[in-house]
Image 1 (tube, protein in one colour):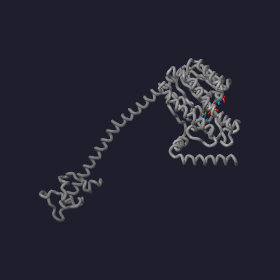
Image 2 (tube, protein in one colour):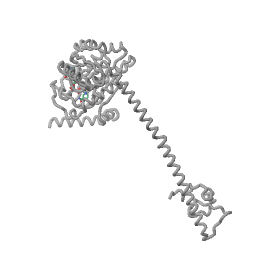
Image 3 (cartoon, helix red, strand yellow):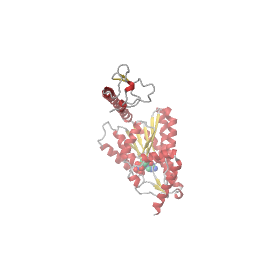
Image 4 (cartoon, protein in one colour):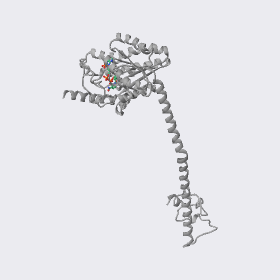
Length: 388
Ligand SMILES: NC(=O)c1ccc[n+]([C@@H]2O[C@H](COP(=O)([O-])OP(=O)(O)OC[C@H]3O[C@@H](n4cnc5c(N)ncnc54)[C@H](OP(=O)(O)O)[C@@H]3O)[C@@H](O)[C@H]2O)c1
């Protein structure tokens, strides 16, 4: 039974001919077991022990229950109406608009990449190699760059043999040069521009990692890492930029790292080079926006590639170890798909990382003290594990 029907001063309806609004002059609260003061005195006034009083109370309660039931039925009816005739079509409409938006975005992305001239550095292995495959399958005209001619030729043969593409594909060109040698970059730029006459998208992917303590690391190693990850890519970008500005069209992509946003101990040269990369391309984005040129910085977390194997150590030798974190990293195939999507959607800054590394980026800004002590503890642990 609905409580409101039997108790409380809220029961202010006229029920069964009894006007419940007419409260007794001095009665404090309505007592449902004593409705006598509410009854019209002229018509009926019960005497002590009158049986009619009980019948009248039951009648009032029944009427009140009926009224409540009618009200709740009305409520259910209204809810039914909303869910069946309003919410469902509204939901379908939202899903429809979202799907249409996604479809248009996909079509726009495909059109942007089809026949686009895409230059990829570091195409001989890891992420660069996988990027070559996804951009090739999207119908891009590729210029594959690297130091190893044989590896580039092998990739070209692999692409030609692949059947994955649903669009018309184009035979790639290959250009070999070393990013640490400024002389070869100038010559390589001319060669790249000769391939298709212009460049639509430049993907600065090539890079080298580093493992070592700052105190043990020679300046030559710091310079080598900076030349490969920072000076080389910015030299190539600067060399290709005038032709992009002239055409008022172009897209420069930098494959940075989550370490371009936060610095991990024993990665100083690598983190520094990626921080510099982030800063340079952020400035470039602002400077060339009015020329119609896009800039995308992509910051992945660990990817399962040979990066740690190829890393340089404090004395310049090859690290040669597949780190546990790198081995557990994302597949380069998946990351290459994300790079394709970020370029196709012309995103400006993309972090490709799980929750924890992404949170660490915010922690560095919002609670630097906590971030620094976490990094110090990480350094202590890493040093201990090396000495044990
Ligand atoms: N793997 C990760 O966990 C991870 C995470 C975040 C960001 N990244 C970034 O992703 C990019 C690709 O690295 P990856 O993981 O694919 O590593 P990778 O397999 O070692 O590939 C590195 C590529 O860079 C090229 N390269 C290195 N030094 C060069 C130089 N001096 N001149 C020209 N090319 C050079 C290499 O060419 P050679 O074959 O000739 O050596 C290779 O093609 C790098 O920028 C890296 O910093 C990687």
